[in-house]
Image (cartoon, rainbow, N blue to C red; front, side, top):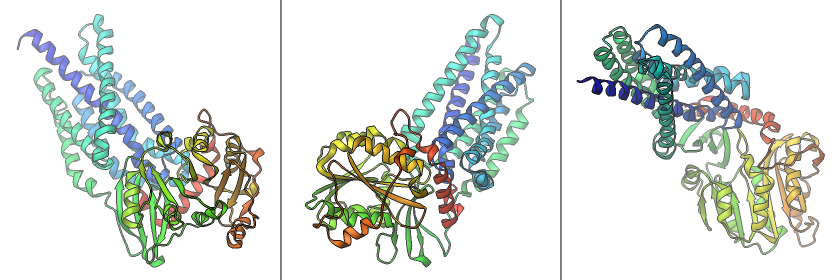
Length: 514
């Protein structure tokens, strides 16, 4: 091989290495939430923890890698092999780490678990860049161009890794399998690099350690691959399980209690009896009373389909209901296990995008997008409510479900929702699902025209049910929620931790650990 060809090859293999490790960094960062979210939710705090840990780990990797590179010209294969092993064992460690950090609460628990699980492999991947810069720099005059080239190619690798994961790989392969596959891919890369180090750098120092790490990793593979198998017992039977783009969707039966649950991560979004399939979520029973408030309802829109019980109830009243659900796995589970049969359009997509495509008017719009980890706050802002206002008939009703503490009507999150609704709708009334309980579902009915619950046209059974649950909320405690600024996740911190603990204690931690 002549000198120019040798020079080209020395650069090419380094560029390929930093490209692939750059892609690996983003795969770990993006997939990290899929392991943490079923336990801690996919809230802003989980994303903040993961981004912060990634930056901390890369900073440490850059620093340590620079020191190592100055002291030795060999070792790149060993670094990559270590990254592979530490990536491979992430799914294996997830359960014990999440259980150990659970007592720390949502914010600290998610941060510490993220730090323990992902920083070791990210530190090793961060070390690759400085090491590659050292190997690619033949003279001081070339250091600027070499450094720029290395980090540019690494960044391009991160971009390609992000697009490949999000657009292609993740919709087809589970997150655990991707972590395991990434660990094995890094092992293969380490073996290629060790051969190059032996042949062109004339060093064998890292050959045995690198090979040993690969052997250890492959030896652990069967145990790691089987560590996330879902367990069933006489108390809980998992009937359906699907990892979607938005979370782990499960149908869980509790035979002794005759209950079937539809869950997304640590949130229950549907519940029915196993024997007869009747709806067990109390707050959803309001849909049996809403049609009485506006006789002659013909068309409804349900945002947040869940198990589909509300749409099926409206169907009994002869109301055609379009359903909008972001998660196709939820829609599949609702049809297969809860007997959901739509009588209107079934729309799968993000609500903010899809409602712009819809044409009203709707006599009734139900916004039921609660999740245990965190509400999708962008669906509870002035801007979203304005879009829904435009889709609503002049005599129509917007019904919005919200989960919170009551605190005698002084809860700031509850007040903020009421205040935000008041910015768009001139009339609203709020109802509590289970009177006497502080932690509750709250249903807001917002209208363009005043609504009188004591109207003589409304049957007593409807009027009594609603008036018994009618509450007054002090809006002075709240803030208006906008796309620009929504403090809802901060205001709902206590709710998120309480709800997560309630669900985990009810079903068991193992159902939320993969």
